[in-house]
Length: 94
Image 1 (tube, rainbow, N blue to C red):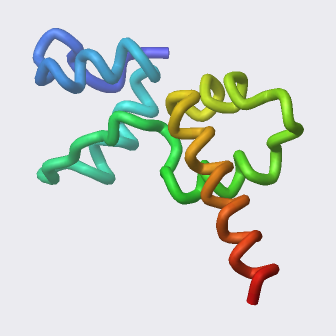
Image 2: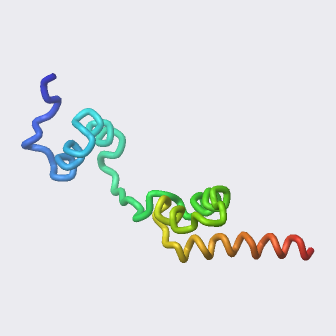
Image 3: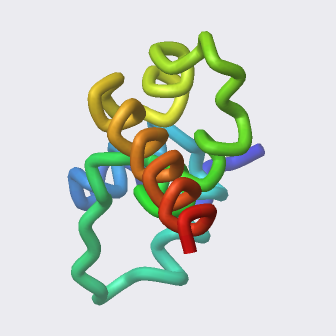
C-alpha cells in the first residue's frame, strides 16, 4: 500500500501519531480534530466512574490491585470505599 501522506512533511504531532497508531488512524484523528486545541487528562479513567466500578469490584482484599488497574493511589481507593461505607451507615441510621 502506498503512503497516503508525505510523512517527512508532517507536523511533529502527526508524525508521532502516525508512529503510534498508523497512518490511516492518524488521518482519522486529523480529520476529526484538526484546528482544535485538545489536552489529554492525566488519568485514563474518569474519577467518578472509576469510583463506581471500584465499589462494584472490591472483594475485601483487592484494594491495591484496583488502584493500579484504574491508575489511582491505594489511598484514594481506600477513601472511596470508606465514603461508600459512611454513606451506607448514614442511610441505615435514617
